Image 1 (cartoon, rainbow, N blue to C red):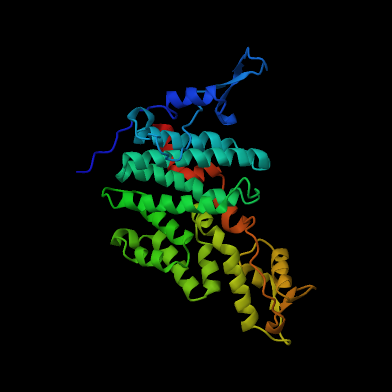
Image 2: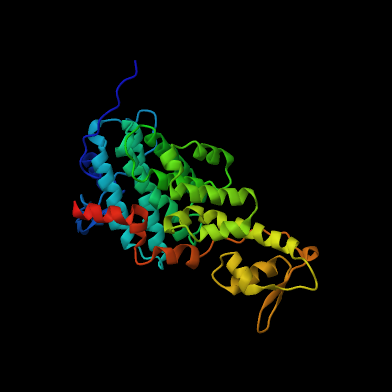
Length: 363
């Protein structure tokens, strides 16, 4: 007979035992310490950082032999986990300075690690249904937006493979929560985000087609399925036209696919319009590829051996015989497809859902 899961009893973001342990071992993150430090009378005379109970958050720990992760006093119940995620996004992430890469790296590593610990508490307690879905949806908001925001960080500070693994695991756990029954106001939204994140994945699309009728017929899911259909059909003009309809969070979900899609689209156009006697308008090509400016389009064409004709009406001479096989461009800033859609909202509000922010503040 299967034993019942433990029930969390810790009402703080970090259990007291861990807080004291990490304080004594000087393993507190800079975002968790008090401004005042305790004097140290040791031989080296260094001050001792103090943990701030209101800022200290339980860190992720890998399960290991002899390491017990299921003590109720060490586990946080769903309400505390939701409060923790809200704090990480609305307090910690809202204060990040995107121009300071050192600050960005420090904040990203902290939030990423603490969200892993949140999911670990969910799994140990086998929390499903609405309680689990709320926590996972907000966690995914961060996980989907972060790759766009930390794109300039070096590999040492941002491991794309590890991040992608956490996104997939989080989506998998969220889908299981949806199967538990009950009302999920954001189910259609997050099913569409999964379809966009896994663009071109037949298995994901097949599962999407089997969603409950109410979710399947929602505008979010229909749009995501239409984008996948355009991708399968190599209809790049339609794909980018549809991508323009996405909101900011959805655009972040598909962000990682944009360079490859643009590269394939441009190669298709080069083969279709290859001729020494015709010119393709540069402005039109920029709009078709949903790029932020003609200079980016010129760079893409030049890298592939195509000739850009300057003048009053710049154009491109497409020649498939001159086509050079190159890797897609690295993901970069997307003003039209991502940032303009954010509007006046903060990134933390995009991650958590702006209407949910208002509800939390009212409560």
